[in-house]
Amino acid sequence: MGVSKTEAFTQADVIIAKYAKALAHPARIAILRILLERRSCICGDIVEELPLSQSTVSQHLKELKEAGLIKGDVEGKKVCYCIDEKVWKEAQQLLQVLFADYTPCGTSCC
Image 1 (tube, one colour):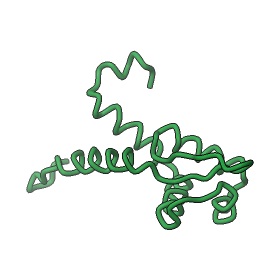
Image 2 (image 1 turned 180 degrees about the horizontal axis):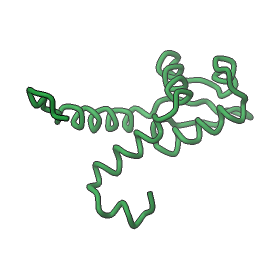
Image 3 (image 1 turned 45 degrees about the horizontal axis):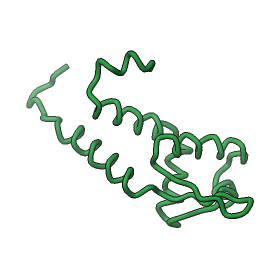
Image 4 (image 1 turned 90 degrees about the horizontal axis):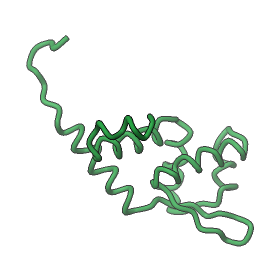
């Protein structure tokens, strides 16, 4: 979505869309699950856990990092990734509000 198009939406909706886009691939969900379980991880360790090439895993890590859901620290020649707790909590809260806004209509709506 172009920058000019996002101006027509609330800031919260733009942020939710950014997080949703980052979560929109099963490999990224798998990476997040690995990071949630281990608390931090070197890229090579993540590659060993997934049926993907190192370059593909790196691309998915880049998407998650650009969305702010993870952060990475350089340790020599390696990058250690972990969940960004502040952004993770924000994403959790925004998505919870979105899902909590649903009210069943009682009968078939469609």
